[in-house]
Image 1: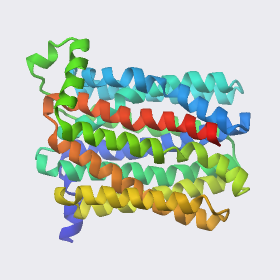
Image 2 (image 1 turned 180 degrees about the horizontal axis):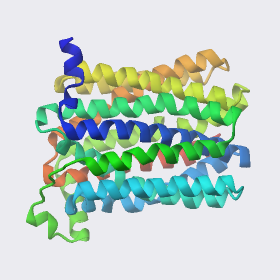
Image 3 (image 1 turned 60 degrees about the horizontal axis):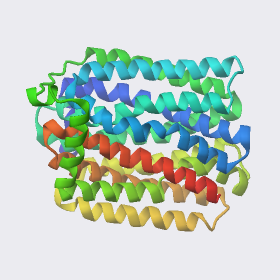
Image 4 (image 1 turned 180 degrees about the vertical axis):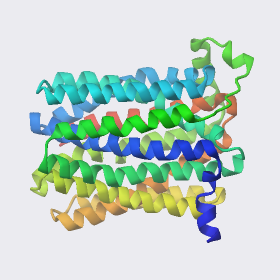
Length: 373
């Protein structure tokens, strides 16, 4: 019982209790939309190269907006920004739903709405990650809040693709986009109910955006532990996290299966990730983080190598489960190590570079992997 209480200790804070369920439902909707988009692009083009190209163009805002997003997060009120971002997410989901319902969706529309979505996501990632320190009153509970956040994403990574695959197989893609829109609505009201005291220093508020960006890069380069951690993350994401783009191709061309099987494969990744994040929330200490990161990297590499030699559906599901365990065993400790060493007034900017190392490199690797495929 004590271990269970320790695993969920961040829930004793009101803001975290409001933040967590809304985020969980919202992320399920996003994963339903993600699998629908990937399957729709492949269905329209039948080209792995085009899939990688679409993902690359969609991710251009991550390279342009993300570095400035960290400055905005550190300058302006996080609560108001968080609320505005949820409204924009809902608007994007509504637009793609309407385009699909009226049969106007095509590759240019997908690219434009994808660019719009990633402009929002570029602000959301550093904003959300830097907000955790405001959701828990005691910083000792910050690692637990981050682990539970990872488990939230991993539940969504399990539930979302499974639901999305079944919806595509037995209804239509428009339903997926509509459900994503409906999933975002509760999060808007929950974020509005939160009471966050976001105190900014005068030096941060009076800093220009360009000067803030310069300080962001300078601060990261002056702290080797931060820059090295982000370099590890960029390499890991570039080499190992293009799988959402490749999986529709793999499912169709290698396994000769439909969208429901794709949902189960991506869902297995989420189950593995969820299991890993819950274990990390219960047992992980700072001293063990680097060892866990190394083991996670080794596990996901091994799973991918074996996956390349199989065309069996059950084996593929099992291997992607272990890939999910390895992925979270690397990503969660990396985030925790970074959050533990970064200064509060630089948190938004450092986490924006971390988001760039994550999302930006995945987009590049998707283009490369799609070209190779």
